[in-house]
Image 1 (tube, protein in one colour):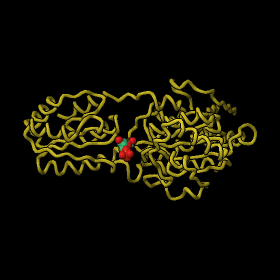
Image 2 (cartoon, rainbow, N blue to C red):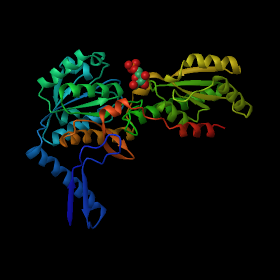
Image 3 (tube, rainbow, N blue to C red):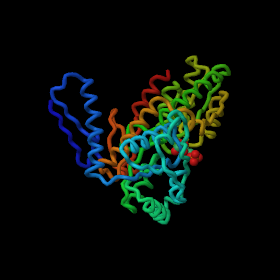
Image 4 (tube, rainbow, N blue to C red):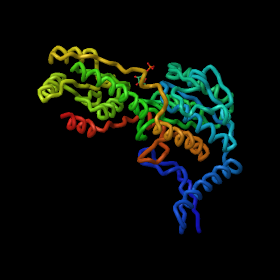
Length: 375
Ligand code: F6P
């Protein structure tokens, strides 16, 4: 039996890079043995690096920006992988705000016990506007240097990844981002930690709204989160069987929407759900226009922060576990400015700047599908 281990060179961020370790096993008797061998070889490779090649000893970790269900699972996976590889890991409280204030504590495997199923983040988080200034970046750099960190793991959304990039440029400290946001608006990754949970939470709420909409024969405009993107609205709208979905990426004509709702009514649909992304305009205004133009009874529900809380779904937890473990592996593999992405089921490194700056396209095909099914 021959085993080959190759660590790929730094990938081109605009192409799909390979997984962090490629193991080719020739003439294996069965798939089970292949999997076991894969694990053993990866562990061996990590240890080898610590002892003989890498200088990675101390890591920092923070959850930043808006919280997302699954952040706790990601912290747990990162901490336990770091500890298992003999590294010390320091947790900063309240995201960048905690880094700026130098509020930290050492985390061990026990410190992250009993949190995998919890929403929110036990490390706490905050919006830190100071990180948009050069003063903030310099201050954070000083704190990270004081801690003598060899790497930092930042778990958060778009703004967090942008700040992480600048922090890396200023400090030269290797930084790995883990995408955790309900908005799913980071490029280079098919999905983000918390997105699936938020979609399911919103769906659960809309199923309940549908009961009352049907009883009263009303139209409900339901506003969902997503900041200036429509990823949440699109998936929620399809899953909820919405009459129409309004997203910022696709222009809509309110008159045509009213006509569509009246036509549906004539076809026997006495109630309707309109799912609207918060970034697609003024939902109160839309509800009022629909009421005035159709003469239907219309109600507006803003789901708001309910979408950010609650137990993470299996998908959000699994993603968090895989990405947390990969973040440490990336640092051991000498990656210095990457985000853990998932592309077609594979965890891959994505250039951090690309992830936060490039615009991830929405799947317009799904919008058409929703329309086609709302008959
Ligand atoms: O980025 C996550 C998100 O929930 C967005 O969907 C929303 O626009 C925003 O955060 C709300 O931010 P905050 O909790 O700071 O009001």
